[in-house]
Image 1: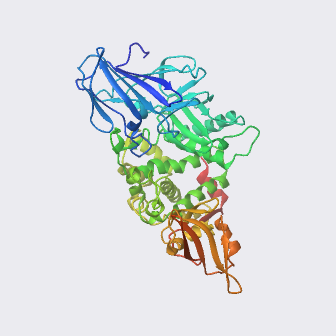
Image 2: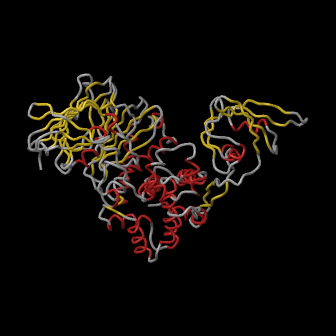
Length: 588
């Protein structure tokens, strides 16, 4: 139905000051309630951390009937307006936009970007009303364009003007990208898609990115059976050093390193470009799996507080399994490249002692306080619901295929049908698994999802033509360290049970040098900048050395054994032993 009248709630966003990074927002409420309440979300769906977006809101003012009215702040993110019912109410405020991530808002003379959760106040009691959003161009940036998944109603050739949303959830689910970006389009299974890229270098091969993304989208639409969206927008910000994405119902916001973009005249896909394609695949898969089919605890979203669920192992983990698998099925990588990606995921989990402490279901529930707030002890106390969740999905898929009744593909589509693309529980997963396979999977989910024992991947991979061999650990892994190497070896994390922990290392130490015994019974001292230099300065078979470490500017001598430790980490190398079996698994 065409737009015919002003919406009940109207937001006008102005690019107020590009140099001060300020948006100015005017919100008009046509029919406010008496003592109307408004609030700004404290989190954004898809990123499970309370981020306190209200900290960036300033100069909130309100008027009704031409007169200023008083505002009472009720909490960190809620306000009550001393207004009368039924008479139009206008609010004015500013938002500081200085976050380059996909989660918040950014504004400078080069680019503008925002999520509605960062800028647009929620009008309590009117969330299901039609919302209008008018975005005004800046005279300081006359050549800028605008891209968003919102429905355009009255916009100019560059995309500025009025958009509408059916409700508040839709309004804040459509991020907005502005600037002098590159833009291209393609159609996937009849659905128009737009891809915009900000910050690309002159070497950027946009046509290749479009072709490869089209293959991904067609593969995923075919996987699910149909697209649930009428159109889709990819918004990619290329920076010097960045990576990440956030899913939305008909769009996604992405960040990548500029060097990871495909380049004209370069045929071979770099590891960085394959990683970018995996990110695109991941966020597009979320169009079905978490934006529509989603945990029952997130229906509806509560924007005022944490929304706890134990199901992120499914929604993020299973998406992480399929993102690279669908690259393989789309022909963008081969079997060897896919196994390389699997190996990386497997070893990330195996090198995390916290996998023996925290189940992947607990990891999901604790995302609000642990996953997004990582510290020196994170690796020892937690496991990622992304990586271990992906391995749980792989275990299920390989076991289902080994038993010959069904596949995880069919389970995913069965869940979509059972839950009508909406709220889902773990009981739904078990029900569909039993329906399609003919047996209960309670024991497997209890062990793999709610337990902390290692997953049976080596055995399952073997039955599908892949052998998992123990691999020689890198020097840092052998010592139980996560490090950063530059002019010295900076200790980032000390892993539980490792040789470094036994020696007394702690996160934050700078490892400058080492003392080693010499063949004539003396001691030699060496300066080191990389851990691989241990093999250079210490003779093979040396049982121990003394590490020279700086902690809080105090120099310490730590006795470090070079033997073996009973640390709960291991390393795998995957090799294909039966190409036909691998193809049966990885082919569409």
